[in-house]
Image (cartoon, rainbow, N blue to C red; front, side):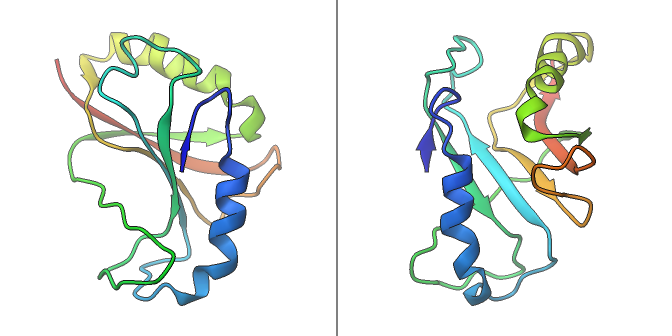
Length: 141
């Protein structure tokens, strides 16, 4: 689904995905994946109104065609992984610290691959104790 940070439709995306999840074959776990695919210049000329693709999904060991579902292959590569604890509505400061402090001082730069979050057994929607893993694609400078 195409969206922006200003017109965030993530809850609608998940509401349309979850009721039909039982038809997906070859799942490798019970985890959910939220992926974002950004245009090449998204972070160079950041604008919260700029559109990107947002995906709701699960990992599978083999792809089968299922009506109503698209597939996204996340290419392998180097990712920095962060644990986020808290409410989705409070993640802004977490991401601002990641992109404004950690990344510039890390010796790495963003790579042009999907960013994604893995929501496992400790993920609790709209709960301050919720945990998820945040994967940021990086490459050496």
